[in-house]
Image 1 (cartoon, rainbow, N blue to C red):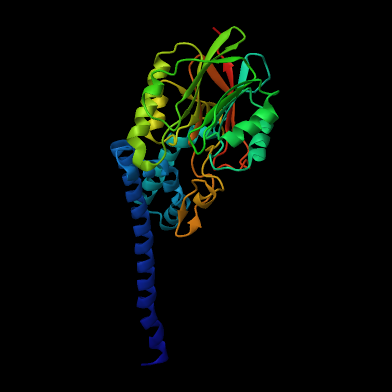
Image 2 (cartoon, rainbow, N blue to C red):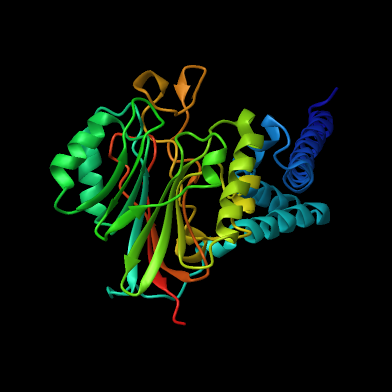
Length: 352
């Protein structure tokens, strides 16, 4: 063999390497295409009928994390099939979440015709009552719905916030079944039927408030948690929707739905009510999970000894009837010692 023969032996090896790389890249694109098909079948075919499909739908957003990498591969390979997959991915993302990145065009202004609402799951095993009070003060809402309110939190709230919120309905209990409503406006407890006919994480609180000439019905709710409880949670969502159908006036739901806006429970409620975040929020608005892991009383999952990243999903909501509109929606501080962040919405009465 002469030296001149050596390059001709290397050429096939280089070609084989390029061929393997191309097959690998094409396989990556096609695999992602199959993932998108599986996502569509699960989301719109299977729904939340199983625990794993509920979890898959709840975490649907993260199926789009590989999309930028797939786009780079498609740009490199310039294959028509890859372009179709990327376009499908982009269209699906825009369909599901594009509206969250479009300015709502409303400028919040302080008027007597508006209400600032806050919903906050304070975490039943949160010992930091001072941090909870600091968050409530910072948000400075007119009406506050609290979930998982313990006797310790109730006592601290009574001492620190009684002047700011002279009207209160507190059902403090150890653990996660307590709840409470703080208000600047006079409130009165009313019949929770038919919401009280099924089991919840604490029976929903239902009150009426007179805001100027308007009588507002306000519901503080907390549905069951966990992928395995999807059917029970959907039943609770249907109870909320039925309650909304039976009330023609201004109506507000505030609470922890324990489901994302890609789950059936959200779709059931929003058939009768409007999601304040979808109306005027910016971005994904994730409220869970916060810092506390189960070892510290929280619900932040731990996989193989490593806690998952914080603020992955939106499960806390403010819903309202057509008698109201959302002027502004935002996420409150996440440093209150809870595994949730508050959701805050400014609502205005629709002119009759």
